[in-house]
Length: 192
Image 1 (cartoon, helix red, strand yellow):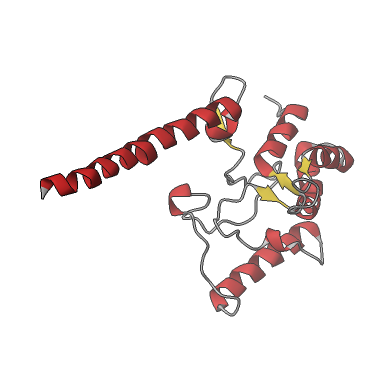
Image 2 (cartoon, helix red, strand yellow):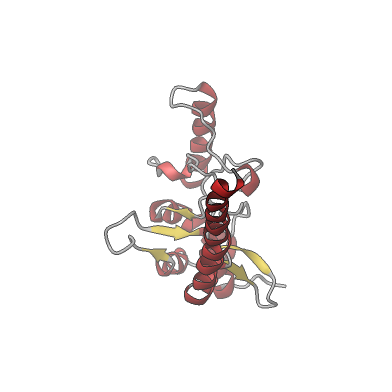
C-alpha cells in the first residue's frame, strides 16, 4: 500500500515546495527588483528617514492647515487591522444622520451648497488615501487661511498633486492626501 501512495506523497511534496516556497520567493524577488518601493509598501519617509506613512493607506488629518481625507469606517479611523466598510445600507438611519452631520459641518465651514460624495462617504476598505479634486478644491480656502497664504497658491499645490486616470481612461482623477499635505508643508513650512 505504501508503494502505491509513494507517488502521491512525492507529488504533494513537490507541489508544496514549488507553489508554497519557490513561487512566493520568486514573485517576491521579482517585485523587489522591478518595483522596490511598491513591494515595500510605498512608504513615505521624512527628511530624517523616519516612516511617516504609506502612499497607499489613508491617515487622519484634522488640523485646518491640512487637506482632510474622506471619512473612514475602519476601526477608530484608518486602522488597517479593522479595514472594512461600515456595511450600513442607504436606508440606515445611523448612516443618514452621520452623512447629514458631516455635510452640515462642511457647509458651515465652506459655504458650499454642493458637496462631493467622497467628503461624506467612506470607501469600501475605510483606508482610501485619495480624495477627489473637487473635495480638495473645496478645502483649499481653509488650508490657505490656516497657512496664511493665497488660495490660488494652495490650489497650485493641489493641482500639481492631482493624479489623472490610470492609462488615461481607467478610474477617476484623484488627490493623494498624504503626499499633497507633505507638499504643502514643504512649500509653506510652519513657523518654529
